[in-house]
Image 1 (tube, one colour):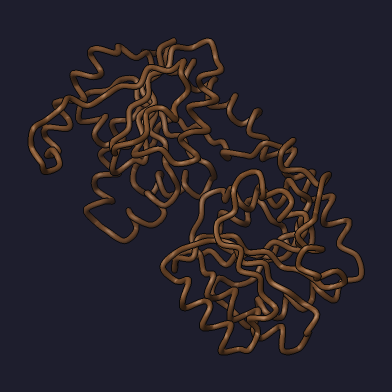
Image 2 (cartoon, helix red, strand yellow):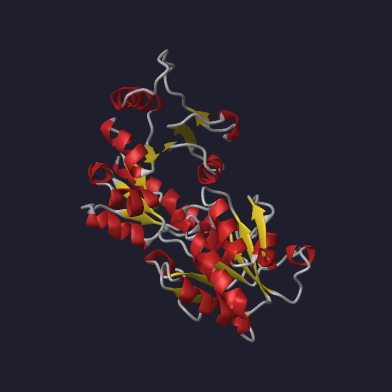
Length: 362
């Protein structure tokens, strides 16, 4: 089977999808809307290129569609996999790609289509022209249905490597920081308004005034970095916070295992990869009660939920977890949940079956 993977760029998620596809028996072509480092793709995939143009400006949408038609003709895919939906899959629809699996990246439908009537209309037309929708959670499927999509869906959380992210292994960061005997919360979301890290910072400031033995591991970069530093300094809690910056893939398991509880105050998400990583490492979680999180967390089992944006409730639940006598049952449930629902190998197989289904109908 010839599969064309068409995406916006070369994010870690794109690399993971393409590397996994390259290990199948299928012939894989990869096309990126943006400029990328072609040598990062596996050597066994065919890297497709846009025609060179002399113009300094970005090609128009009409030019992109024209060029994509030529690429589709030359590659002759049995299945075209394209997403995000408004930016990428929409071009595939206009270029006549069939059969087309349009993959939502979560925020494209949950945020962009919600905020912009124009984007919502593009998404609606794109979904109508798609043979199948790929989504990482039921929350995204419901949004697609609201936009009028009535076709088949392939639902699979993108998942994690359960051998890499495991409760077993080093947890050296706690000792490196000299925080043995302290209760550690971890937040490693991007420091942007969408992810509510400012809510976490304010809640931690409240909680730490009442329990001086709690600590916060804060990883991530973004436009709110200075603001979040200032919030914690104003609360006189910066000494109880470790700012880790960007954490690489091989550092992450130790970081998760060094924490007692993972916390996220995201205002919108699909199936959050960092949440799945935390569950896989057996970390109880404290997360906002948005619908996608509720697909993973039942309060009292894998951790606790708090009202989205409510820093006071988040602070109270931080204190509750820090005072809990034993979180081992929650920890075991977290790992069980990850094994059941967040296994990348099992979930990727769902996508392969969707390709096979589409290739049959053509």
